[in-house]
Each structure stands twice: as C-alpha cells, then as structure tokens.
Length: 576
Image 1 (cartoon, rainbow, N blue to C red):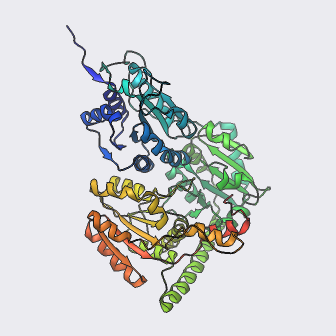
Image 2 (image 1 turned 120 degrees about the vertical axis):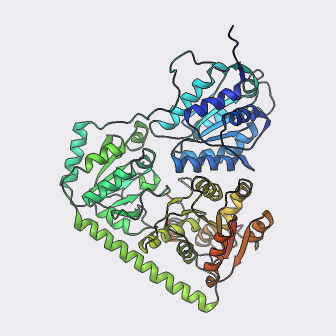
Image 3 (image 1 turned 90 degrees about the horizontal axis):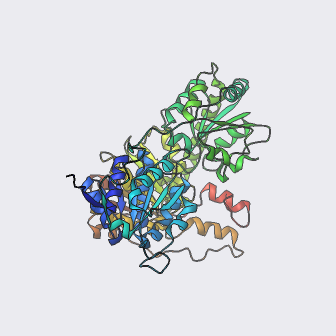
C-alpha cells in the first residue's frame, strides 16, 4: 500500500521554486512565512535574512540584475507594505524578481483577518502578474505561471500571495503534478524572430545612412544580447550609446561604445544623436529618458527605428518611424552582416569623447587645486575619480544618491578613458529611488566574492537605506562604503536655490553625522577624511581590513550638470 507523504503548502512553494532554478531568497523571517522557510531549509536554498523587507526586495532585485535569473523576496502581510518601494524599483528596470507574500487567512478573507491586506491589488500596477493562490493543489502551477510571466516577453517583477492557512496546511508532495506541464523546470525563453521583409527594409535604411547611431537599452541586457551589440558596432564602426539609468552593458574594451545617451551627463551624445540621420534603438522604450522620441532629442528629419523583443515594448514605441518585433541579438546579428563601415563617423565621436574628457579633466584639476589651496572640502567629482583610481580592474562599483549619482556617471567615463575596466556598475533605476546602494553593493559582493565592491553614496541616500548595512555584517559579505558627505540633500537644496524667490534652501540640511563611527560600532572599519590627500591611504586601509568599511568624506555641495540643466530650464525644476 502506497502512503503519500504529506508536506505543508510552504514546502510545496519552496520545492516549486527550487525546481525552477532559484538559487537565492531574501526575507525578513516572520511567522506567516515559516512553512516556506522550512521548505527552503530542506531544499538547501541560501537565505539572506534582512533587517527590513524593503532591504530584502532590493537585495533580490540586485541579485536578479547581476545574474539575470529571478531571485525571491519572501515577506509577510505587513512586510509586503514595506517591500512596495523595492517592487517599484524592480518594475522600473524590468527586473524579474519573484515577490511572495505570506498573506492573511483565506478562510476569513474580507472579515478582518489578522494582518489582512489586499496585497494582490496593491502589487498589480507594479508587476506583470499578481495573483492569490486559493488552492494548495495549484501551488506548483502558479509558480510556473509567475515564472513565465516574469521571464518572457519584456521581463519584470511578479507577485504571488499564499494565504497563511494554505501555507500551513498539508498536501501530498506531488500535489497538482498530474496535469501538464509535467516538467516544470526552467525552460528556454521564447524569442521573436524578425519578419524578413521588415528586417530587409531596416537593413536597407542602414546601408543608405551616412551617420547611423545605435542606442541599446534594457531589452538587450535582459535578452543577453550585449555581445551582439558590441560585435555589430565594432564591425560596422557605428557609435553605440547606452540608455541612462541601467546597468552598463558594454565594457570599455568595445571601442564603439561611447557612453550614455544623455545630453547632460555625457554631452557628446547630443551632437551624435542630433546629427545622426538614422537612430537604431534596440531594446529601448521611448519614455521620458528618450524624450518620447521627440525633438529636440531626436530631430524630426532623423529616421527612428525601434527594435524590441516583445509586443509590450513595442506598445511604448508607437512614435517610431519603423518598428521591428525581434529578439535584440537576432536583429544585431543580421545587422553585423551589412558589408559597410562608418569609420569616419565613429572616429568623430571618439574625438569628441576625448575632447570632453580633456575638458572635464582640466576643469576638475583646476577646481581641486583651488580647493587644496583654500583648504576647502573635496569636489564630489574628484572624490568619484579618486575612488575609481583606488580600485582594480574587475571590481564592482555602485553609486546612489542625487548629485552623487550624476557626478559618478561622469567620473566613470573619465576613468574609463584612463584605462579603468570595471567588472560592473549598479545604481538606482528609472525611478531614482534613493537608498538602494548598500543592497545593490551587497548583491554584487555576494555574487562576486573575489572582487572588491565599492559603494559611493550621498549622505541622504545612505540615510534612506543604510540600515541594510547590518546584513553585510550578519552574512560576512564585506563592502566598502564611501560617503559623499555634504551634510544635506544637496540635489534638492541646489534646485531650491534656483527655484525659490529668496534663493535659499529649506528643510534639506543634516547635522554632522559620524557615519564612520557607526560602522566601527557594528564591528567594521571606519575613517573620516577631511582632505583629498587623506583619501588614497584610507581607501587602501579599508580594503585591506577585510571588513565592511566606511570612509566618511567631507565634500562640498556642487550641482551636477543634469540637475543644473533641468532646474534652470523650468521654474518647476522638472526632470522632464
């Protein structure tokens, strides 16, 4: 007589996720989620327990962005509310995180159950798929549905709510496995192949172009098409730009890669894009970052082609002159077959880049010389450059903040021209959500244990998410945190001083916060840096300590070009 083994619903959930290939889950352990945690323990799933649910969500997001494989954020009902900002950040970057809620009892739903919240409705606008599992026999099925929604088409976060009575109830361990698909392991993601006629139309436009430009976006990254992007630009000698607010796709070894498609953070992109007669946007959305495809970003006489791997992306790109539904790599491989090159056009962009680097290098040298002569605080751009000078090739850089973020973007281009080859870069996404830096840095170090991971964060950004630093100590995952400490929300105060009639700022100042001693109190390494000449040795001591470390650097507030441009453009200081 066969006796079926019974397991809890939470264990069914854990096994279904393990079958999909999930290799990390992040949580703040709570009673509602205990059966799932027991299941993860039995599956030997690595779990990182965090001090806050938002931290758990950002860690899952960071891990997913680096590995390009879904990670899990597991929270309870009230913890779900805390995780919503992380859901927003993942949604903005189309990061396929699996958010799971151990929710209030199904039996008494709508009657005021303990910690009852309509998590499915709250998550719906921030995810591709949000559903409550109401039948324990279907747990594996809904994990399969959520996984497919997260990873196919244009990827993005998903949400599953598992009521606590189903989480704790017992089911046969093969519950729901008597129906197709019998194999619920991860499968290759379906990819769109280009329509031959439309593809040939676009390739003919490329052949006829005098000044083509490639702009790569999220779709290239998530479809793992960055090598094809580099190959196409290098072979055809077409300049490549990267949409802002996403992980850098190409390394500096690709000489066709020019930097961000951002007129303020990387000014040479303005001339290239506005002079181009053909702009090929691959895996991008015509959103506010691209000015919705409109002038003056892309002139009306320029032919605009959008190539996207899913209908969801194409729906955002109705303004394109020509659209193509195609996996980015499939299109880029076909593009590489074009037997022409645009050497002079690429050389012009390279010369412009060198000129831009020279101008900024001279500017910051003069600023720094003045600061040192006057005994003033460090310029944030000089700090960003000094940080990268103290790193090694292959190390990971994370930056977080307002002006801090933008100055580090500029520094990355300058440092790359000087030979620095970073292993990767992470930073806040489309929503510019402050406080993700520590979580992202921890994610990078967790995946790349043999590399140094450095976070450059504004003081305001660190205050938004700095609690997550405890996880670095708890998990023994050491990172280096460099605080660009200008004693306030400098990005906002600089805008206020240009907007307010009295030219002053209000409600944006901080007291003198000893961030370095906070780290020492937790068992880490901490140093205060008041002058530039103190920084290099402090950086090396922090790395050599082997501990999670903080270098608290007193910097002066300097408005970045993008904040200056946007705040000067309109009285409301709008980014758009």
